[in-house]
Length: 432
Image (cartoon, rainbow, N blue to C red; front, side, top):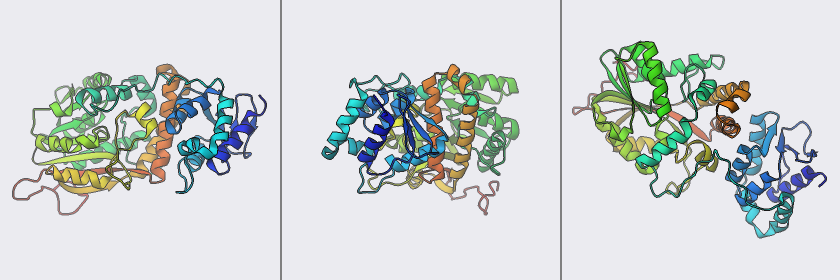
């Protein structure tokens, strides 16, 4: 077959009704498209079969993870251009899934089928999460499996991506020129300040990860910490770090669902990058559980990614790539919905700080770490898994930069009877 790239370019433009903003390089070595633009590399016809059998984001994700699709050039620029071409369409323009199903494009689809031959359904990459319906969504068992899928992929891999801080949430940047470790230390300290941690304080860290916040809080503020996670690998790593720091008498790490914590009350609770896993159907239960675990006057710091509000907030929406390969069963809610549910649970919300630009900077540093150690990253996990992380982190950085999603720190108090919150009169001065 000659000049497959030109045929692909013309078919894409016919389906989408717009000029293709990237170059295309096909499996036969041919190229077509604007000179100097990032190049979408179609390494194998199987990429087309993935797309035809699963039109839309999941098909594209499968082709990427399998290595049948790649990008030559600036990944961020390529993703920006492709987002505008495929997903961010005018209301009267079809998206890719719609175009492949519309009768007027049958001839183009037949041409794609011919290019993709043999037209057999390709197997999903092994890195894809397998599930059987959503009947038991966010049960303890399903949450445990989802967390294991994401976090139990090797601590050495996460060390490579996250760096020495081993913090897997948005850093807090004094300037773009700061180091990742400095920005993560500043985020940990910000959380401790907002919670007014001091010697004698008892802290529950929900979704404690590899123990970074627990260690910082115990070492720098003299608090006693219980950290809970559903990841066996995270717990083992955290316990080893804690022993090396000589803090085993101050920190306990449990492999435990937050719904099973029974030894309250705590003076403070941190939930950093964990609530995204809770799910909308369980969120009020989550908020009430944390409220019950706090002593009167205790503070909650809830650090959570948020999506923009949608027209129909009752509809279930999911990012197919993220759900299948990154955070199975994860759900994002608008920050207003989060605040409302926390207050329904009995909390008094005292402060909301939006820090989405900080997450964009963080993600770009993680991508740089991954790309700088690409060969080792593939050995530590798998080539497909490394490709998942590179795509999701780069795409997420752009989503934060373009205000498609945000991240917020919500400080809430279990205000006691009488109404004395214990907070200072001036906001952002966290100690009374």
